[in-house]
Image (cartoon, rainbow over all chains, first blue to last red; front, side, top):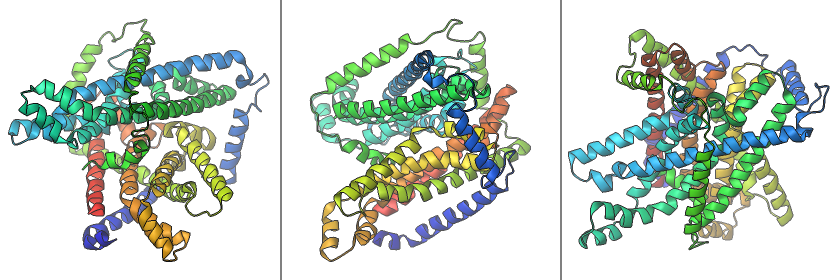
Length: 275
Length: 276
C-alpha cells in the first residue's frame, strides 16, 4: 500500500488509462452490429438451447455418434494425431529456444560490448515477433510452405512457443547464480563448457517445468491449429459443424476435454519428476 | 525483471524438491514422446509444397518491405483498435467473473471444514471446465449457438480467461505468507478483513502481472477471433494472405507486435512499482 502512495502519479494514470480503455472498448464492441440476434434476447437463448439439444442428439433420427464404438475409435485416433502434434510442437520449440537462449541473456553475451548488446537485442526481437503472432496466424502462413498436416501444425505452434519459451528462458538465465560459472571460468573452462556445466544445470529444471506447463497450453491450441493445418480433432470438428453433424461435434468435444484433462494430469506428474 | 516467471513461479514451486533424483527418468520419457511424435508425421505429397520454397522467399522478402502507404496504415490502425477493444471487453468479463470465483475457490472466506471444502471443490470444478476449452473453440460454439454477434467474441475470450485468472488468484491467495495473516487474526480481524488487508496485498503484484499477461494473450485471441467475422487484425492478415499480398500481411502483424510490446512494458512498469 505504501508503494502505491509513493508512485501515485503513475498508478493514477494507469487506473485512468484502464478506465478509458474499458469504456472505449465496450462502446466500440457494442456499437458493432452482428447478423445474429442480440445476446439478451429470448430468441438468442432459444437458439442456444436448440443447439445444446442438437448436441445431445435430439435432432437426429439414428443413434447419436457418442453411442457408437466406431465413432469413439475414430475420435481417439484423431486425438492421438492432436497429441502427436502438440508433443512435436513442444519439442521443436524447446530445441529452438535452448539453442538461442544464450544469445538473449545479457549476463552471458551483453556485458559491455556493443556487438553483444546488439546480439541480445536481435535475439529478443525475434522472440517478440514470434511470440506476438498467434499460432493460428502462423498456421495460415506455414501452410504456404509446408503441406497441411501434423508437421505444418506443429511448426506453427512451435514458432509461437519458441518466442514464449525463449523469453522465459532468457529471464531464467539472467537470474542464475554467477558463482558456479565464475568458478568454472577461473579453472579454465571454455565457453561451451561454461554453458554446459555452469549454466545449463541451473536452468534446465525450471525450463522443463515451464515447457511442461506450456505443453498444457499447446495441447488446447493444437485443436484450433488443426482447423487450418487440416489434421486432428480440430479439422474434424469444423467439418462436422459445417455438415450439421451435431452428435459428432458433441463426441469430439468430449474427447477434446478428456484429452486436455489427461494432459493436465500427466503434466503435473511429470513436473514432479522435473524437481 | 522476470515478471512472467515470478507470476508463474507458484504453479511450479509446489513440486520443488519433492522428488529428487528422478530427472533421468523424465529426460527419457520426454525424448521417447518426442521420437514417437515424429513417427506420426504423414506426408503423402511431400513435406514441402511444390513452390513452397519460393513462397518462403517471397514472405521473407516482404518482411522488410511492408505496405506502409497512409491509406492502408490507417485501416490497419483501425483494425488494431477493433482487436484491442475486443481484448479489453473480454478481459473485463474475465476479471468480473474470475475474481469472485477465484476467491471462492481459494476457500479463505469460509469457515467450517465441510462447507469450505464443498465451496472450494465446486468453484474449482467450474473454473476447470471454463478453462478446459480453448477460446477459439468457445467462439465456434457461441457462433453456432447465438449466431454472429460481438457478444459471442467477448464471451469467447472472457469465459476461458475467467477460468485461468480464477485459478491463479485462488493459488496466490492460499500461498500468502502466514505470519502477517496470523497477526491480523490475533488483532481480531474477520475472515474478510484478513482477505482485504492480508492476502490481497500479498498477492496483488503476481496476480496483476498474470492478468496483464492474459491481457496480452487476449489481444492475440481477439486477433484470431476476427476470422469468425468480427473484423480486426486477424481478418486483415488472412485477407492479405488470400490475395498473396505478403507486403500487406506484415503490416497488421507488426501492429500486433506493437500492441503486445506495449502491454508488456506497461505490465512490467506496474509490477516494478508494486514490488518496491
